[in-house]
Image: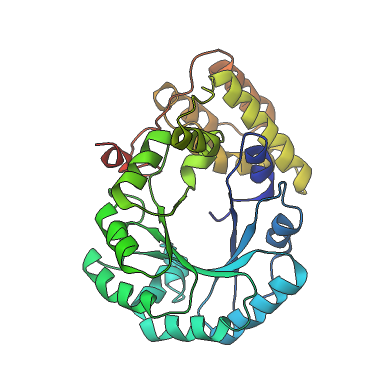
Length: 328
């Protein structure tokens, strides 16, 4: 996830169990681009022993090839992933990300150009269509014919962004159809929804984004759930510790002109973390804070207790939506 799947967050996740595989923010690839140093550093200085996949976004096969070579020369990334799913209007407006789903010939050209050069795994991240799920059948035929090692599927269309239930039937169909591994993505917010996604799709892997930012214990909770082990139940005091630890990691990683800049950076994370806590009052207060002292005071007021951290976020149609369908 752009601007939030960053090395300071990874360090906090790793101390709480962490994922089995990390995927970078996407490297923006165009004619004049060079691999962004901060994203590259997340591979080079990755906090654990888990493999790290370098994700790229772009639409020019030759520039993507050039960047693939640079990434492999400058890091020990375990593989290359091409983003075909980002729904951001600025990205799609440049005919990258999710917009590539409208140009099957270009997707094929990109994959066939890069395949001989990729030394590790070569994967794609996709959605089930640009406008409607009816596009997915043709996309499946395309993907099945490509020389890739796996496919991660966010079970919504580009137009649906993050604001609809996940089309688990499409992911299930892909699992049965494609000759390589399929990873399911979308609305996995706790162990119960992870089990529900796996039960509904049969996918060989689960990709977690927003849910893992909100709940850094989630990756270990999911592993425990699949193993039948009782997991740690975090409290609001644990969440306070996580937020302050993330603050310290971010502060140490960047050149912040003042505390206000740091607070604004932290809000990119707390928008997710606070979901479901105190009916939105906590996040509303944090969003109005403009000094580090006030930000910390609000955290102390809402999180200095042994109240259990809510297992589910708020289903608000913006950050988190559609997860109830995974446990129905």
